[in-house]
Image 1 (spheres, one colour):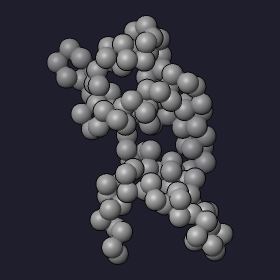
Image 2 (cartoon, one colour; image 1 turned 180 degrees about the horizontal axis):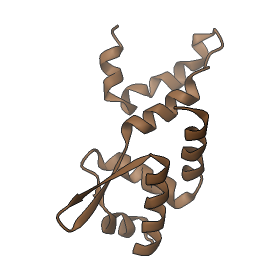
Image 3 (cartoon, one colour; image 1 turned 180 degrees about the vertical axis):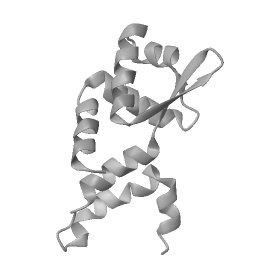
Length: 119
């Protein structure tokens, strides 16, 4: 992830409703959620949630797919992982013990990292 993409991601996440939506979609898993359910759970109008979903999709943090007459939104786990890696790229400054607390959450964030733990 380059700095421009990271800034777009942080900009999208800097709004309360959008941050809530991303966390909701992360919890929903790869199957995602329909826009109506997101609006209901976030307690915002359908037009309001549509605006926020567009911003999150534009930033690359979520994806959408059509299923019949519904649009299903999902967290883009690769993009979220890239954002975390971007933040942690220069971590530690030669002192790995500094990053231990941040690294401890890594297995829950990216299942593919679990396979790399033993390498």
